[in-house]
Length: 369
Image 1: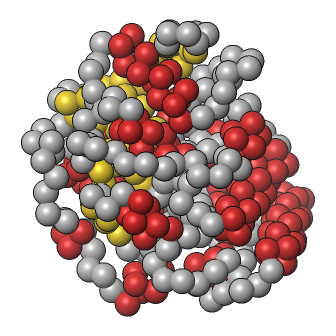
Image 2: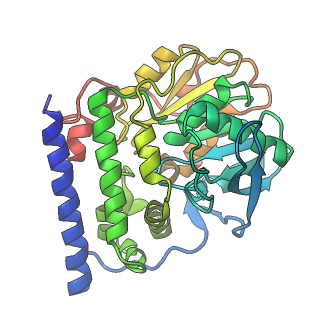
């Protein structure tokens, strides 16, 4: 195991190299790869055109007993049982844009911005940023929106929030994509250093430059290589949205500090079906953390997304949507047999990704450097 200080130094050096690369490319006007046209508003996946709805942002005031009012931005579309989508640290409801078109024909989808992210104002001063408080606020938002016990799917920080909502008994089912909090201390410091570097890069790239850089495969690799398994295959707009979300996240630093708390999630979630989903190529929350999550929550199903990185919603949006739909069927009140085989075989590469390599070894963490 390489010392954590060495990993941190490597991340800092990597961030410096990325920033120099961005400035050099902008100065000399190009990349080895040819400029690709900007992606249209729709996505083309597996030969199927999927066009998202227009941007219809609304705001809800969550008034939980004993707490100040918290305002949340959200988008609501579709029909069926209600499904809440919760984004990760530094991101926003727009992280789900490629997935929502697959969901809204069978679910009423509510994608929210957590306080301090996207278009939601930051937490009121003095309000504690922990899972119980977040659950109370979101529970009050459910009441204001007229929904009762929605299904919830959350990614990274949102996955942790989803588990907290399940523990509070506020949701029908929990689908947690690479949920935060199941790290050891070295892995936490590694993940936080990567995210902090991504935030610094987002602040370095001038307005408009991110869109220009994201129009090339090489630019997407430089800007978002840690987030996606294959950033060159992501729509240019997805990378631009990600960088903009990181840059404009007023709650980023405070949320990162709150995440240093030991034991972010503990206890059980009785009576709520849980699905844990992990990409085998996640370079930020290493895949072996999935085994810890299912050890804490032995009733949970574990589904691997082969070849997907930390933000699988852009690596494989159709697959992610299918997993969520399966996990939120109307009869999901009784957990069914593990359906992992219908999405992926536990190949040698998947088993290796879930193995015991460390941030400085030859596993996912070492490859990220």
